[in-house]
Figure 1: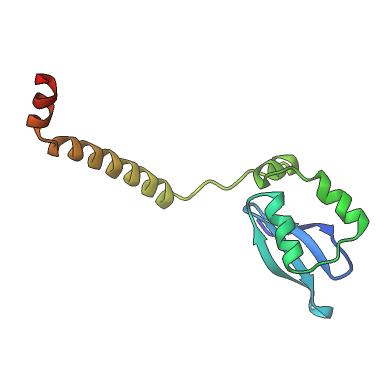
Figure 2: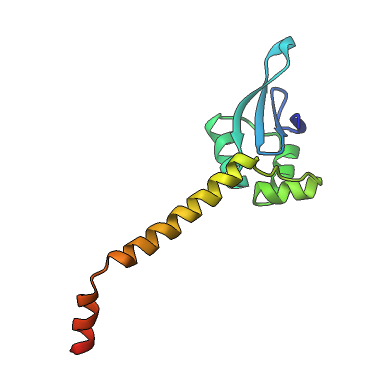
Length: 123
């Protein structure tokens, strides 16, 4: 999905989004708009990034920022955009990671000495 500009913060700064994050953009003369920051988490993080860039936000834009949902995922739902699903490789990674965790837990139990259990039961 290409990024979509949805809010002008002032004459030189704007907010856009794609399927993964909000994008703070700056106008560079006749060359157009360029991404300066990417925030895919919360409005609080978005506000911190705007403050860090020392962007003076217009009153109208400030009101629109106040209306944004707290999390980026909720914003996407509001826009009617589905969040991307990871590719097959990332799904496989998560399955392999979970399988390895299970194997480590089982092997840790296998390594526990039986005598430690019987000593506790005897006491």
